[in-house]
Amino acid sequence: MNRKGISKLLKSDYTLSAVSKVLTMLIGLLSSVFSTRYLGVVNKGTYAYITQLSKNAVIISNLGVYQSYSYNYKRLGKDTLKKYSDICFLQFFVFALLAAAVCFVSKDFCIIMVALLVPFNMLKMQYENIVLVENMRLRMFLHVFNQVLLTVCYAVLYFTAESNVLYIVLLTVFVDAFTVVFYLCKLHYVPKIWQVDFRFLLEVLKFGFIPMLSLLLVTLNYSVDIFFLEHLGTGEELGQYAFAATIINYVWMLPDAFKEVLFSKSARKFDRENISLSVKISVGSMLCCLAGFAVLGKFLIKLVYGAEFLPAYGVVLVLIIGAFPMAMFKLLGIVLISQGKRGAHFVSLAVSAAINVAANIYAIPIWGMYGAAWASVLSYTVCGTVLTAYFCKTYSFGLKELFLPSKSDIAKIKKLIKRK
Image (cartoon, rainbow, N blue to C red; front, side, top):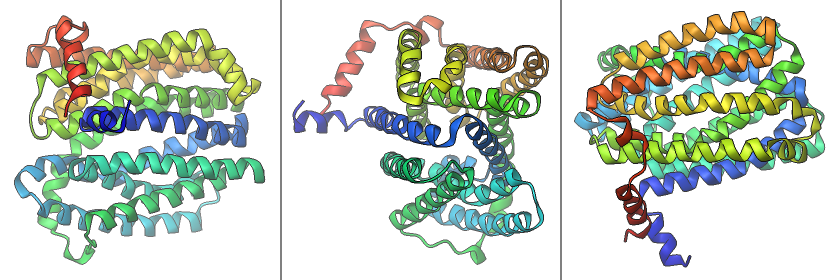
């Protein structure tokens, strides 16, 4: 394809998002090779435990502030960035002080690592969601750049340093801080925490509370197995399971790419055809991943990550089964949120999370990491099925329209590629 053809291809937000996710996935795979080999099985599990703790802490400390950004952008326009930036940095200041106090008082290594991660990760998450509305392409570019930066740093650690979780945590903090500074430079605004509009802040907190709880439930659904394996399983099982979860994150990348574009576009207009096409492409891509990994998975794990991670092969296959319904939840859930329909999103997550907790408590002592994997599959299936049924009923979608490719879908894909 010549330069002109590439330029046409990248004019579509959907195509560009898919391309950026593919690049991120390819670079990220190389990054995960260096980081996984550097950490080893046990430290891989420890870092996964720290990461999942910090993710849940970040969601709670964020209080759902950014959740209303797309809604308020429609009525406030350019003033939206100023109001939210001031609030975000006030939060960062408060939680940075709390994190410093925790680091000073606590003697638990994992808790200290979480305290280091939370303030910067919270601020990064807020600005990533702000930029998703303000300048989606900028966000895509920085994701790719950050992945390249992390890959280089992981490679340096792999070749020069002994396995140490602290080094990975400090690197993550650095990348989070760099991301926020970069966005601020591009958005041309310096936050002023003394100018926070507290009346507006209360409105934002009220709007974001239910979505915050929903996001917390989503994250718990992804992390509760890690928490239970830490306490009910072995360090070896935790490391193998954490590695399997890393692989699944790459399977989810294409649905995530469409999720981001759908959120950005649905915040402006409900587009029935684009929603249907996104679901079909995402499901098709994951079918290819399942088939490919089933055939080549063992060979690739041994070749790329080392024979010590081969026990995770079966766990990956089990988790991919659960990735299908969860992809539906990701895609359709984000559309419902953009349309202000938060109730069904929250209820499906609450039921799913409760099932996940109960299933993990029962299954891990019996089947170890495979028990955790099947518990996740059960939870994801309930979550995705309930939300898909609600979405189809609310917007009069038939299963055929949502899942089965048609000739018109192929024509749409060709049109996206040939668009001038």
